[in-house]
Structures are given as C-alpha cells and as structure tokens.
Image (cartoon, rainbow, N blue to C red; front, side, top):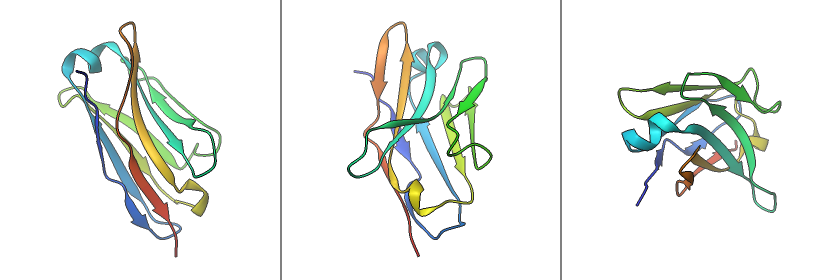
Length: 115
C-alpha cells in the first residue's frame, strides 16, 4: 500500500508562513510528479504546485511568487514553503504522487489563515 504522509499544517495569521512536508517511498518518489492540491470548504480541489523528478516546478497563479515547492531526493520528501499567507489560502492541503503506476494521495493537512 502506497503511503504519502503530510505534515506542517496549522493556524497562522495573515502574512505569516508555514512549511508543508510530504514523504513517501523511494520507489514512488523517484518515478512520480509530486503535487500539492488544496480544497477549501464548498470548493473543488485545485492544483497548487507540482515538481517533476527532475526538479521542474509549476504553480497556480494564485500562489505564484508566494509559495515555493522543493524536493529532497535523499529524504523522499517534498516541501511547500508558503509565505505571505492569505485567508483565501485556508484549505486542506493534499499531497499527490502521479506517475505510470497511477495516482496516490495523502490524507491531507489543514491550513487555516486567520487573525
């Protein structure tokens, strides 16, 4: 059973920062495009950012210039550094590994931006 473990969510004030982490197995990590999605209450799940096995990244317009996605191949982990957080960033954030073997999702971690 493929497992993706997310961590790092929490409550932060507007303008603050959080760093999310997602770790999985070496086999999945090395063969997958790693993604962060988020889902706010009453809204559809949306792609936030992705990183390829070669380190190429892409971001949604809503987080570009505020969020940075990176990967540590030695730790089979991706990191989403989120700066200048806004109330509209409040959502459950999900990690996804996508590749030839299919898509695998984590359980999600809650991020709440509120004063």
